Amino acid sequence: MCGIIGYIGPKNSIPILINGLKRLEYRGYDSAGISFLNDGKVSVRRCAGKIKELESSIKSEKLKSPIGVGHTRWATHGKPSEENAHPHRAGGIVVVHNGIIENYFELRAGLKKKGHKFTSETDTEVICHLIHSYIKKSKSLEEATKKALKHVDGAYAIGVISESEPDKIIAVKKDSPLVLGIGEGEYFLASDIPAFLKYTRKVIILENDEMAVMTRSGVSISNILKNKPVKKKIMQITWSPTMAEKGGYKHFMMKEIFEQPRAIADTIRGRFSIEKAKVNIEEFSLTESRLKNLKKIFLVACGTSWHAALIGKYMLEDMAQIPCEVDIASEFRYRKPLIPRGSLMIVITQSGETADTLAAQREAKRLGAKVMTICNVVGSTSAREADSVCFTHSGPEIGVASTKAFTTQLTALYLFSIAVAKAKGKLKPKEIKSLFRDLLELPEKVEQALQCNNAILKIARKFHRVSDFLYLGRGINYPIALEGALKLKEISYIHAEGYPAGEMKHGPIALIDKDLPVLALAPDSNVLEKILSNMEEVKSRGGQLIAVATEGNSKIQSRASHVVLMPKTNNYLSPIIFSIPLHLLAYHISVLRKCNVDQPRNLAKSVTVE
Ligand code: AGP
Image (cartoon, rainbow, N blue to C red; front, side, top):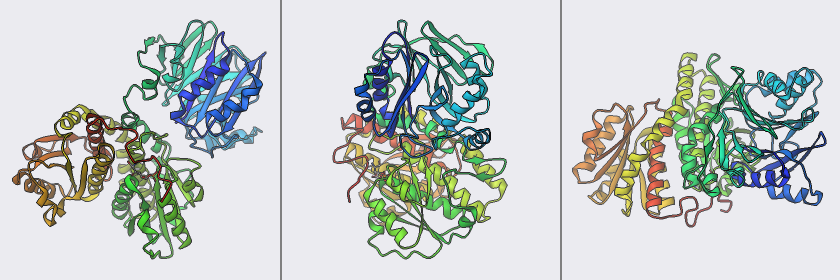
């Protein structure tokens, strides 16, 4: 998830680009750059680090230009560095891009064969070279861009400028957000509204396959597949700039909860082939033969990522029938772990900087394990030190309470489990294809699950004053009971516990009374009857029951005073779906208790100390 800005008009574009990028810093901030045109000549300024580094690096030049584009990066391909920063250039063509080009490897190889020289590790640079290869054979920059994009598979929001037509910006959208700002004789393009809200509140939202041609005299929009002009509605935005950074949501956490369909779609994009029944995680450097010979897998993490690790164990042992051991990172390194030869350590960390997790990762390496990290930050310490990396493409997660990073970790674990199961011959192609079809439906299922928001708000209104909460789950959803409890603890400061439902009779049942709300996770599964009887135990002792179940469950209504129904999916993906109401419940209770949702007391987004 990166930030794009573009401007054409009577003003000096440079400060507009820099200010716009600052407003988009929440979308990515590991490197930044701008490109602008003067007298038909294009210039590029880029640097690693935050936008303020870019700003100070150009300050003395007092740059001026009426047209330019800018970009702030959240790396997905290629480490954060000046040469990988956008804008990218080929000859007189400059491109800024947000998204993932799935077939960039093949395109790059083909272009290299034709003599194109690449200077970065990014997928984006391929787009510049493709447009450059067409510009001389096309009547216009938009024509060359259309021809180039016909070769491209994947998601992109792009801004293009060219020395050949220095009074024009081209913008094209496909599966990554792109909006236009319509000013008085000036026009903006951006990944998100906050970038230009200071200058205009008139906005056009581009849809997939739409191209905007922006000149000093106006904007024309067409559909590049139908080759037809498109009439677009101009929206009047009433948000404040701060609200706009949160996409109109009150808190980053809520925005990130609702970003999950996109985040999951980005994490799976281009990483598996149904027809070949095969996983292909491009950063994933462990070979199929190494997976086949794996003897044991260790999973280590902290907090919410540890819950993902627990779920990973269920997936791996069930799909690939490989023994797995899960550790809390801060325990792992002090327990003298026995790591047999041929073991793999999976480190799960959103930030890639958690001190306890890094220490466990280094200890595992010292003991001879190969290490793969599932991480959300390209260039982070964990990613750099691991033998293999599977990046979650959820984009920056600003809220301290992890949501989209967690569900994309589970998505990555699902893909990895299938890869190991296939390598070990434990799943037939038919079974793999079915698992992939369920995965393809997941973003839509998450969209459906998010519709429970209002029902959850009602439940939050009833229970936001309690002092204790109990979450119960079984099987692969037991860690989701832990996750629901952690989320409630960390953002509403209510004491909450997650428990395996079968453990109730071994102690926690003594807690049950009318003042203790109990949330039971009851998805359709081989243990549904068990959890229903656990719910009876709670109800018969006067406990207040909230149940989250699978739609179509006819027995659940009589068992609980509050029931929330989730869309059906396979057992492995049910934790992703069932985490959504629990994250929303913690969020709404936190807001009702007037807690600081995005920055809860005593907590940091990344715990870089032991
Ligand atoms: C998640 O809601 C918490 N903020 C916290 O438990 C977090 O998951 C933990 O600190 C691990 O962080 P990491 O994934 O960046 O390593």
